[in-house]
Length: 99
Length: 466
Image 1 (cartoon, rainbow over the protein chains, first blue to last red):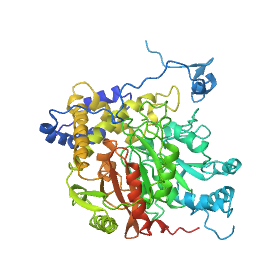
Image 2: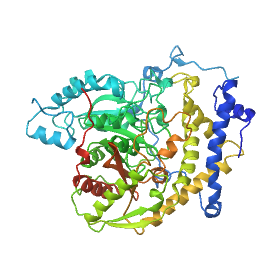
Image 3: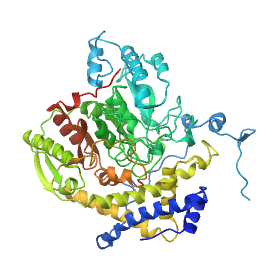
Image 4: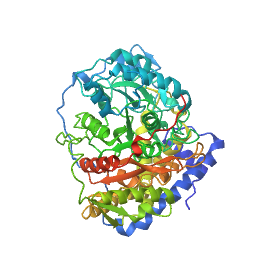
């Protein structure tokens, strides 16, 4: 059974931008390992799936296009766009520094 | 209109009552609001209590729904009302537009009287993972309503609305409908627009109706289905009246009974109840055929990978910048799912997990296609058990997947399905599940309707003390 090390759990948490407390690492690691062990049973089907393609969506549609025009009824006002934001400055979103 | 059970009305009965001027939608809403005030403190169905305002906009005589009150699962955006997906992260989120399904019910004269509880982010099958506490099952308040659309199903069962909207990714309409003894229709993927639904697993999310009867489900499907240019996965099929052929004969309809859906993992009394409903269908002219499908266990594993992967991607947008609180507000279940999905999509593991799951998905689709060469519908229990006690999900990281094992295969394949009440085990409702090929809603509804009309299960109501 694949067991995720605490380092791996920390790495995944970092990729997912989640803060996991050190004391929770073990518990989450073992829960994730348990689920991974469960889904690993798909390997039983390797023979059946070796020649099959992947299905990413089941709508039966391909390449759905629309005109590149502005739909007025769908445009948010600045006030609406910012309504649920907790940190604005002169009508802009405030975000963390990237660089 | 004294002494009439207005909250207990179906859509059909209400519309007939309006035509005969027996009562008004305002009277229905008022009696339901009164009932909500009495029952909601115990059942905890609603996440926001704005139903007191509902009466102000119930004058809609010239519409299909004529003001009839409905409730809406709280992962469906409503411009007027807070939408939380039962997560503290969105505890004060005020949408700036309506979901397409919301616009459709409002344009057709529906009156939204409340937003209903659910598993947080729709991650679960119990409503117990709601950050605001679980809804309780109206049939037994020591038990769970199922989920994730548990609040919507409980509201319909307890007559706290005339009908409800829910969403299903894999079981979230059908399983709570089964546990609460009501009708839940999960349409073919793409038939009902996802625009304005808080995304969970975008490749399987399907909004649909939860109702008191099959006719009502067909009537609501008429309203909410149809192409939506705002959802690129929305399909373009000609409009149908799904109520039209409900009474056409079901003689000769071939119903496949997969032995894998009656395995020893399914409660024996649930199996017996469903089996006897199938015998009933046989008497009505349907042909039962034993068939074999891929073990649903594989669908659980496939769904788990696909769903967690899509969740990790969809929930990346909650960065606390445009809406909601920051990511520390995610509950335990959401964090677990995001992390597993991040892992299965990450470099080095993508092929072993995600790619493999998407191949098994093809296998599952082919498996169903093969089955539908010989049968018209597939029948089985919706859930392996009846409603489980409060607390059943404690420490169970795969609870939802096990509870939904019989509906996950069809969800992954984008097929339509229904849960229709088919009996009781120890006074708890059991749901008969019917699954059809893509876009076979008419046939599913027709068989479900005629089964329902041959029984009185749908007429039974939970005993609730007012």
